[in-house]
Image (cartoon, rainbow, N blue to C red; front, side):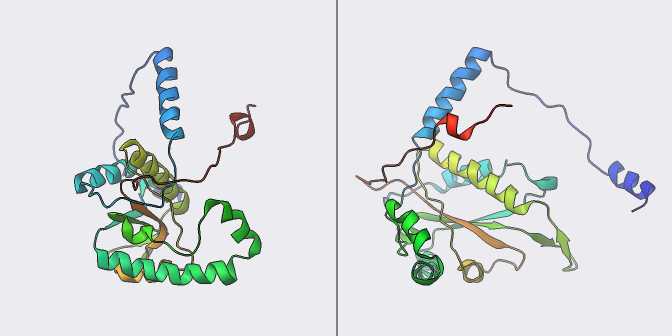
Length: 232
């Protein structure tokens, strides 16, 4: 690309706007950061859900929050498919469990299966149908223009992962629970069930709802700050 062509493209960018940050004292900042940490520290992956209904308005707020995530070139390369239909949830569960049974018995290997055994997980995924909602997060490795031509997106994997992280935090903040489920080898079948375009690929599944009464979670701990942080 010639320099003048590059300059012409830059001139087409939208005007910038002033950023208005929220002002806090340092004491307030420390307090807010500590409170947020304490709140997020109580977050757990939950696989048993109550049948108590969840407002679709609440779900929309969660997705809007995820949509505030940063993304490469602001392309926002994601679609959040909200599944409430029992029939569709059942179809997704069937293809996931079919592949997961193969994963656990043939593909994952003994060490992988052993490493997740303390979490009490296996190829059965009842939460995919028990939760009031199932969120299927689709990433867009590329997009199609009006002529059907492929156009690139940038850092779609990282961008979508950040959005999922924000969504998980928003879910916990709202008092709901989820578990991040990766449908290994079932993505294409799920995309076909949902009739999503070819440029969309399944990233993760997030069952969404209230925790079941008396639900238990694995007794695990997070690594200490000394183990995960280095100051240079």
